[in-house]
Image (cartoon, rainbow, N blue to C red; front, side, top):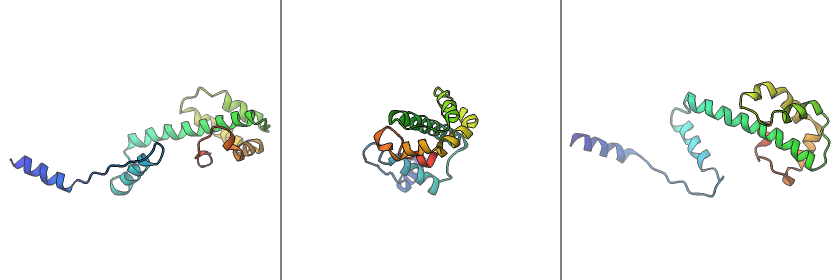
Length: 132
């Protein structure tokens, strides 16, 4: 009986929230922000798992920009950076450490910037500029 009352008291204090919305509308992001703000933030394992997602986004943005530039017939000036990124299309998240300079040079490339300015004409993450 005492455990039931204790559970009942705990449940009365608990607040549940149903988040509704279309896919990619920010439901998960909202939930994560609430966790960071109102709880103790992310655990070390959560941080580690997010790192690989971020690394994946960085490399996929770089690869998609190169492919977009090719599709739009825009010349990439830094062919070495382009080759280095494309040679690692089948990458593991750890590869970003070795590719960071190539990705930086690629992002600074005038051709890649021209392709980015026309990114509505090919598939590219909306947050690409943030990651690169």
